[in-house]
Image (cartoon, rainbow, N blue to C red; front, top):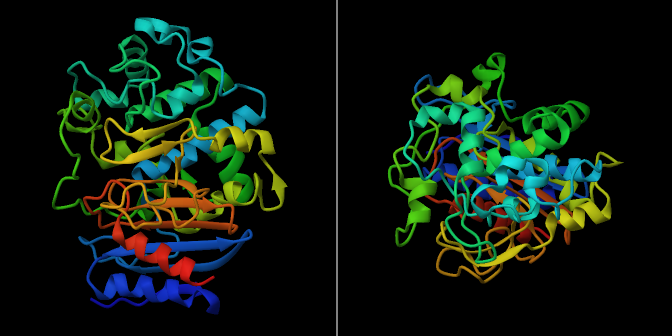
Length: 384
């Protein structure tokens, strides 16, 4: 399948355009976009294909895409903003902000541990209706009361949906605002970023329609943690329809945005805490945000991972059977970002001054390391 490629790529980064076109030529995409920034300036901004298989609508310059867990990068940066403002600290306990969270032995869990998937709450363990996810107070009460599935200090277990409620309630208790509100008021509006956690109804018409993968992800050997996170009948929000899902604030799972704006936001990580020349995060906050908090074989994801406070650190060579030798985000061990179910990703490489994002509407079964962005990332680094 061929598709007209729109946008631009500087001559130095023509390989990225060629790789993007190859994904379409090989029939791997329906609609997609990729954006690259270097030293705070755009060097590639490309889009192509269709936004809806049902209507055949073209992918537009401003098509919004649900990016699933790539949303966690947005949420992590909103929490970092609150740290910078002195409203909370990564080292304080969650219970110091949210006293109910101390139930069932969780009184020592810190904000950093909760954000790095160490709290033992990868999913809701008691049976519930998938529509219950739309009741914020009910879910946060369940998480506060639930016993952790493993002892604190015994590694990570990825929290695909519950992360957003933990981060969101931490933000709400510390600042009185939701993660989506902070993202909008402190980042999106001042810097012209088309990013949303909680998409207003008037924006739904710009959103791409997702094409679900034909196969389920490879989770490896099933265990109770994986079942709670991904495999129970109530593991993900449901039964309310797409409009309700888009407008809800699932701060770990349903952010919407463009590749252009996601890459722009990643400048905070590649440009030493600055965005458009304004210093948003100090060196100390940026260091605390990106510091490795846990490393090892995850209990939920079938990967060896290194989590910072809501972000994935790159681990070149750690998952050779599932990723290139250079890892999920290029060759630098200092690259950091997040990926979303089905293929989306956004990362920053401070060593190269690179900010990168890829979004699409044809989902694959990859949890991390989809070969389509992998090809784009390889082309990017071949361009230097």
